[in-house]
Length: 279
Ligand SMILES: [Zn+2]
Image (cartoon, rainbow, N blue to C red):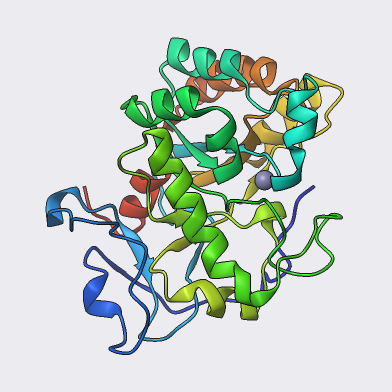
């Protein structure tokens, strides 16, 4: 049910691996790469706009190959600490165990607040070659007004919120978070894309909404995913028990069925690479 507010944007983006060559001379230093520049071979593929342009948006790969990326948002809002202290669980270790058992590569979009709350799990995800960790903001506050009741971030705090998330994720022990960002609630507009564009990240949305948040029936989630998946799809799900308690059950049905239909599971970075027709 989460939708992006700006479906009309179709940025003319080039797929490149060297971000630094695409930064305008006077733009702030991107948060990616973080400290030491990775080698070209290890640099994740990203979409990059022209100098000074808005953050590019990736929703699915353009490919005929039957590949699909399951993505999991590890949501926790900055003001949910008291709920966690009272026993609410924003993690979902059994879901991660299921992905490992099923050998499903996945991309986890982690909030910095989640990494602060569950540093051992964050580190374990970051060190597992099956997974890649990307940025879902620090606070899980919205980057637009009117986004599913989420508190809105003022424009002058958007960049620092994204940077703070990377700091928290790295502090938890994830050495190499990916240069991908998912807007909380999936909500963004031109101003948000422009404001965080200089960070050198690619916004990753989706073309298949699983509907797992507050789902009361796992079969409905399964059907929604199976009906929606096309070659190159990005599926959004959640790694947050309190909000999406049926996701593990849905995954255990979705995975074998999609494999039966000839699909292979990949990470978002593989999809972005496949979009460019590169190996
Ligand atoms: Zn979220």
